Length: 325
Image (cartoon, rainbow, N blue to C red; front, top):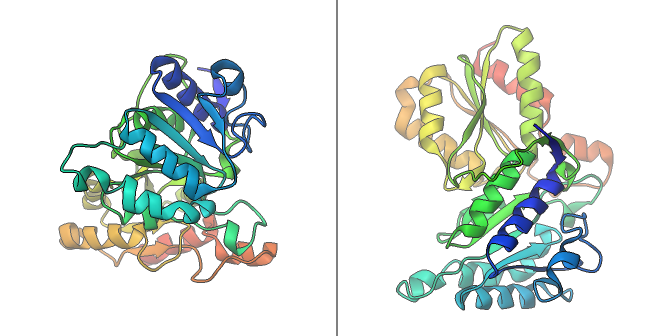
């Protein structure tokens, strides 16, 4: 099977859906003439023209509102944020319009729109450009929140998101755009809301998503040499969360570690741990542990970034703790 970059998988998903459905279009900052800030939309303007690949002003609130209105009128917009840090400027349109119109209209309007772009940290970008907001958006009924960790998942999930009749928040990592992985040439879709067991194991369940999966897999390799066999679960989507897969795993391993980049208060791991203790408390042989980003704005200095982010060493330490080792 061929291997392509994460950015290429995203592009293929958009191109295939735009060829399939004339109502799909892409809009955002630098998506057209510049071929995308991260070259995700490279070549799309040449194929589809300026009516379907649209450069916008630096006005997230404005073009997000245009996208929501277009979706209400039968189109299927893909709205790209250069980074989800900038989506805060548009959050009123996302939360108060895109997420709520279907319910507020008594089902008369669907809002089939995808908001996609880079999320979380990406090196020395400092406090206001390094934030992970997946738990903010997952907190809002009416939205679906997808965070792929491989090129394969990125393409299959994005195609499903574009075809979905509900608004979807699709979060990518700038640091993964150059990652390569196997992607079939034939069409495929991955259902939204179904987790993926990346590695089977019987000693401890580790739940994560997005680029932090890399740290989890690195930790699992280290732990395997110590005789600890980890089951690694990639959530893929954080609204809805596939609790059935998690609980089934915990009933087998009897231990749980959750790993994510966002701040610790009220994050996805909080909900996972709560649900597991509610539904599978009697199966736990140790308290569940969360490994998260630090409870502070991210610094600029590399040393501060290293202290802030989850890493393999912190994951290994957490697993040893739940194993009482």
